[in-house]
Length: 347
Image 1 (cartoon, rainbow, N blue to C red):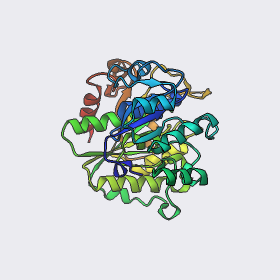
Image 2: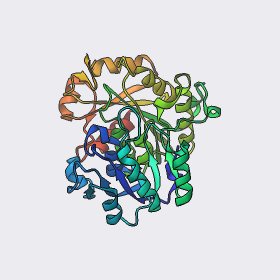
Image 3: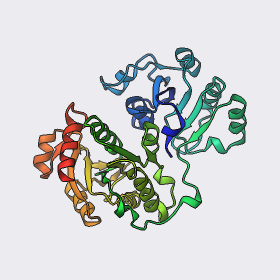
Image 4: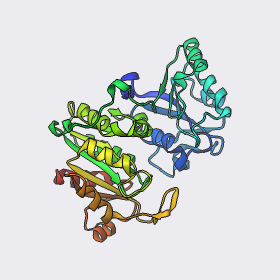
């Protein structure tokens, strides 16, 4: 999926983040507000943090001071120019909360297209199809997998691309792989490089990846082939392709998708993302984080790639000394540029 082709960017948007804005559960909404090159967030709907602004809720002074309101009616009153509703939370269990139905209807009737990260596909349900037709709006379900005709196993065709391919991987889930990918891409653009990026999750697609798929919706046998197609497509038009990774190789629950992305992208270099303060795995505290050295060994043992650098949440100098790897913190002012310089040297 490439949402860049569907809108005249940037397009004004209302971001629905009910109950989760600023939290891990609202990471899609957080990412859209912080980074999207497609959607210009005009207002956020979240009754829990209403009355504040996005920069305050996210704890990021570099974020826009987008107002947070409690209701959809207030959001549309604040941003009557909005053309899109971005559903930035995917509730546990996959269902559409009853309390959101009226909000989504109200936005559609006001002329907003819907970009949804929900596990349920609104574009396949008769009531939403009819409402979209009546309102003259569109529904984009970013979690939809590729059509069956577009599924194939990996065949190594990515080996023939002329572009450099850089994959972000991690020592655990939710350590900042998407953020690191985007910050590397943005730093490369600012340096005048011809670069594109590939998303493997819904947030990246909404932020503005040049191609993307929600990889956990692709049948297992075809994940490497789908990633290979995305990378080769972006590589046709750019000199460097940054690829967003998922999970990690040493994670017993999710390593399968991680390996598929590694083999599908077959990168020239890897940037490993690490939270140095994390000891147990997110949502799986019974398992310890294996650590940087174990992850590097697994990556380099299962591919031809070199781990070029470490993207750390902590002190970069300390991380570099501990792990004998160049390191940078992308939340530092010079972090993305430093990380990019290291990657370019490795390439």
